[in-house]
Length: 267
Figure 1 (tube, rainbow, N blue to C red):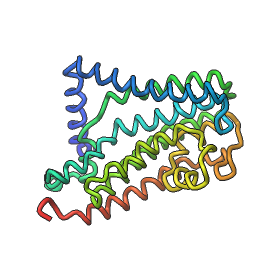
Figure 2: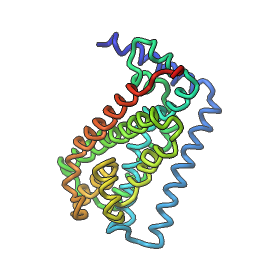
Figure 3: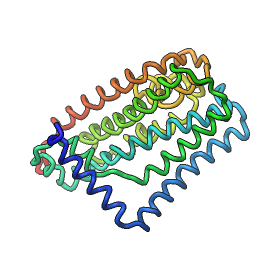
């Protein structure tokens, strides 16, 4: 088993060393990602500074939703977000080279890069969640610790599945990144908002079809002891692993259909 994963560890290790070799460039990448995270956090502060309560959540609660969803999205983006480069490989005809190697194509794409600059956004999310948790007065117990752990792990898996799902769609669209970005980065934006402000169609889309509300909103409701909306009660936070499994089922079905549809650079 160790020998089976050795090539992937070697590739990832080389990518990490390559990014750290050019320290100034690496530091600028980290700083740029940090600024993006801070701008998004500032946007939430501006909204809550004027509204005070958004979707039944006060500022500390919204901070927790923002922080948890940003941590899970940034971790998924760091680990597998680069699969959205698939359209470039298809257009350039270089995807065929992946088929010549003994490893699965998806595994090769997922380990082809690792964006360490995303760690800056993970840190912004962690600080936002910590501040919101301290101000929100969470009464911790084993159940809430378990929900938080599930939210972090399964939430990251949900966003990773969304990235793979979007990549599978690209086999059919070729250059439809704007369409798929509405579900990846658009889903990340939606996950940072209280889902109680969404109209019913969006609740169905981001709650059950592409279940990004499980990455932040539902776990925070459970941590704070809030009931939640009619379609999204807080006890659904315990089903975050089920939402992750559903997302990966969709992703693998789409990926399988996409790879069957692809006929190579020569058509």
